[in-house]
Length: 108
Length: 194
Image 1 (tube, chains in turn purple, cyan):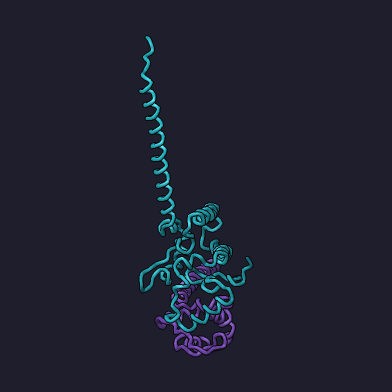
Image 2 (cartoon, rainbow over the protein chains, first blue to last red; image 1 turned 90 degrees about the horizontal axis):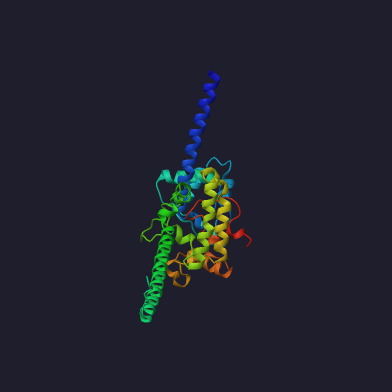
C-alpha cells in the first residue's frame, strides 16, 4: 500500500513536471518566433546561423553555458555571416523571457 | 363535351411563355446556386471555419497567434487561407479538395490529438513546403511582391541574403519556415527533393 502511494506520487510529480516543461517549450518557441530568431536559425537544420541543436552541443558540459548564451542574445555581439562580420540581433523581452529561450536552446 | 380549340395565336403565346419561364427559372436557379456556392466557398476561407475543429485551434492556430503574421505594428494580418489557399479559382478549388484529406484524417483519428498531430507534423509540413517550392512560394508572394521591396529599408543582412537567394534560385520558403508554426525536426525545405 505504502509502495503504491509512493509510485502514484512519483508518477503525479513526473506528469506535473512534464506539463511544466511542455508549457516552457511552447513559451520559448513563441518567443523565438516573435523575436525573429527563426529567420536565421532552425531547430536542427542549417540556415544562415547555426541550428539550436548545434548551439546546445557547443555549450554541452560548459558550466557557464547559460550565462554566455544570455550575454550573446542580449548584447548584440559581432558574428560572422557568410564571411562578413555583423552584429547579432538583440533578443527583446524580460529577463524571464530570455531565460526561457536560453534554457530551451540549451535543452535541444 | 366537345374540345375547345384555342386560337393558334394563343397556343404560340403559351409556348413562348413556357420557354420564357424555363429560361428565367434556370437563370434564377443558376444565380442562386452560384451565389450559394460562392458564399460557401468564401465561408471556408474564414479564420473561424479553419479553427472550427479543436485540432487546428489547439495546435497550428495557437502557434500562429502573436507571430508577426497575426499581430504587428500596422495591423495587417495574414490569416490561414492567405498562406495555405491560392487565390486563383482553379488552384483554390484544388487546395480545397486536398484539404478534405485533413478532415478525413481528423475523422479517422489520425491527427485528432496533439500527440498524434505532432507525430504527423513533419509529414504535413513537407506537403506544404513542397507545394510552396513548386509554386515559387506563391502564397508569400501574393502579399510580398519582390519588385516592390525597397532594399534601402531592409537590413544589410536581409539585402545580402535576398541577393544570395536570388542568385542561387531559392524561394521564400527555403529560409522563411518555422515563422508561423512550430518547426518540425527532420529535413527542411532546402533538403526536399521535388
